[in-house]
Structure formats: C-alpha cells, structure tokens
Length: 193
Image 1 (cartoon, rainbow, N blue to C red):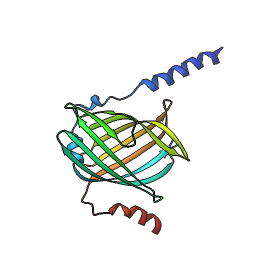
Image 2 (cartoon, helix red, strand yellow):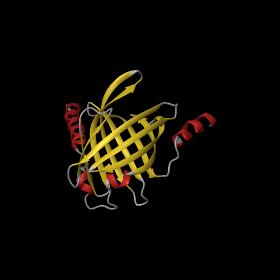
Image 3 (cartoon, helix red, strand yellow):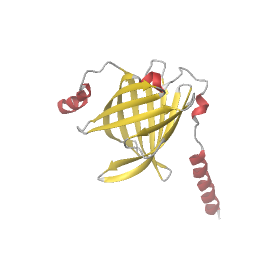
Image 4 (cartoon, one colour):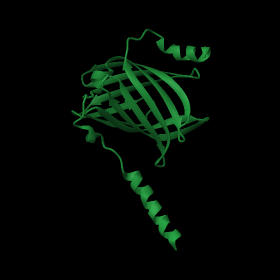
C-alpha cells in the first residue's frame, strides 16, 4: 500500500519540476544591461563545449562571429571550428521588434525564433536539427546568455527532446580583434597536444 502512495507523489514531483522555469523578465533590474546589438556588433570570439546528458564533454569548439547592425537588424555570421577539425557556419538575422524583443532566423533553424532580453540576460527557444551519430535529431534549444561585469558573455543552452535535457552547450564570448583564419588555433593546438 505504501509503495502505491509514493508512485503518484514521485510522478507529481517530476511534473512540477518540468513546469518550474526561470523567465527572462526575472532579470529586468539586473546590471550590466545586455543589448545584443551593441555587444555583437563587430568581432567576437567564443569558446565552447557540448556535453551529453551525463555531463561528459563530447566536443569542444571555437566560434568567430562578425556582427553588423543596421535599421534594427542584427546579422551574426558565425564560423565554427570543432576540435576534430570539422567546420560549420550559421548566419543569424535578428530584427528588433520592441525594447526587449527580437525575431530571429538562421540558415539551420526551422522557422522564426522569438527572443527576449531583460537586464543582463537574453533568452530564446528554437528547434534545431543536429546530426548525432549519423542520424538527424530535432532538439528544442533553450538558449540563455548572461552579460558579465567584465564584458564577457556566458551562454548555456539546454538541448531537449520530449521534455528531457539530453545535452548542454556552454560558451564564453569575448570581444576580440581577430585576424583572418585565427580560429584555426584550436585545430593546431589539438594536433600538437
């Protein structure tokens, strides 16, 4: 009899945990103020890693980003270099639709993405198809960026499928002066190390 009372309680706790989440508006009064157009205009570099559901690092990478902002439209041209030598490119186009709102598209994202920024935080959720072990899997990405007082941005993205977090992506962004092909340094480090 006791066993049966625990099962519904446990199921209820899992449901409640799945419903609880932070809203980007919770950060409205925080500083420093994060304006993605201001931050990403120019050249930015990020260093990141992909972890699986257990926390094991599966891949590491660098991203060189060139950002332009004109007529309330932010374009981010991102070049990825992974530790195994693979490269990828994503181009985001964000249109500012209000003081806290952006509408975005990317070449590998299905449909339009609604994004919001308040205080030091930025959040967007979007579907993304990723090749995993030779199979294309559609994930829901819950992407959070936080501007730090030292002008770096920390980015954490949960990769979800059927409501379960199956992986996480973590990046640190920094404004830098980048020479052409400078992101090749990761591949060089890997081959030498």
